[in-house]
Image (tube, rainbow, N blue to C red; front, side, top):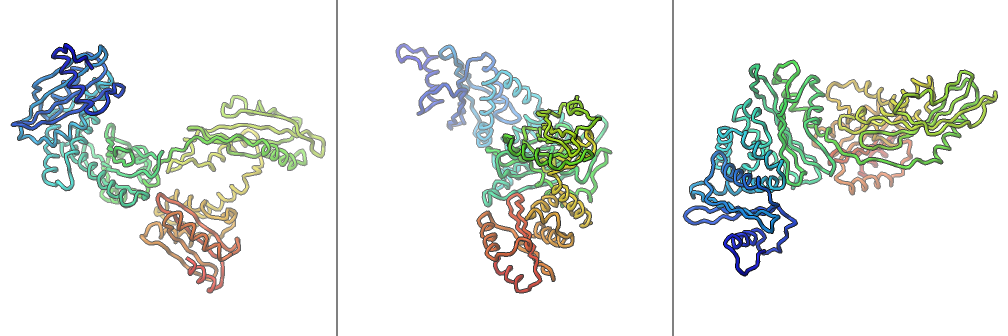
Length: 594
């Protein structure tokens, strides 16, 4: 602050502005830029906006332009006074005073000010952003902005319990985020509809999450619309999507929506620049609008839209992507040595095929790493391992050594390889990595180079996948099957070895009960036959799950007689049991325990 002695008028004003900015708090210039405002009511409303930032000549024009042009949507306000001054040769202090006629709704101006101040701070902090903000605002036609504002003002007045003045903040974001071409290609009513629909959707999501923060909520609305292009009108299908994130690291955007729609329509494309997002302040609630067209240019029929309305919501819940932190685990060399010795013992004769072990090592960003152990016989037509994998950048040969002889005194060779793959090739519909298919790709690479091999540690995995594929074919149900859910269901059965040996008839009955529980608003469903009791139920949280499993253990059922299912989906925990017994008393006792 300036010294009190012999202050000039300019210095007095600067001191007053700084005091007004920091008020009762200690002056801290490390937090600049700082912008605040005050509203004084006399015969008219006097609005004062103060700021302090690092000195830049262009900041004065930016400060004046953004306030005078955008304080009130669709009209320019008259600035009564603008004061600017350097402070300590480093900072710029500014104050603008505006007088507003009392007939104008000051509440809407105040709501807009909250968003405008955030933009002012960004612009004062960066030359690039100040130019970008002014550029984006100037390309918005006053006529379009005025129409949207009038429409939203009508809704605020007509439905005050639904809409508040903060909807104008969303309008401001819409006008900045969307291009002039986007708004010109669509009727004014559609632009207004995008704003107020996303506004309502976010409020409804917020209310639902307050009631049950551990549940996944997903809203979906579809509208048919037209877009004007150089070649005439084009039919588009607009999607309004809203959902809550249950944990940190979850993602959902236009690529996830497109992937969900692609399950039903393969040839689709996203309309350029049609993606507009509105999130809650903490980022836990997301709403967005996006348009999709068919590749052949035809419009979506009513039956197709109804199909998406009925099926897509559940499909999209499975498309929420979870960001997985890179997985790295130092390799257990003792395990490598154990497998090397074991594979060597499998080879007795010169004609024995190579023995391999494939182990998953870790994941770093978009790459997967596997360690491969190969033991083979060195014959007369032997080709060194480095020549076999020559020019293959995905394979690193770490170690090669001789480890013994066959019964005909042929040398045996062990090779340790590191193989990496790009995980994007093996993403499932929910964007999780399908490690089985990734492993199969490694196996396919080895067979291409080595010929026939024996996958020593892949026998159980291969058997499981064989049963799973047979199960899918055995179900022979139409489009009601969600392949992701079906696969997760199968691999959520325990004990693991039961997946290889369970009869498909039993598995089908069990899955159909689970499918009913998943789709209907019920807590439990069961079925009895001569051979078994089938039961599927929802557990309300981990505590109830633990109580259920404790009750089951108290029955002391032999492992081979009980198959269990544990399957968390979003916020629900699904439990299931197949109890193999022909005793009616045992079945009834099992049900009583639960």
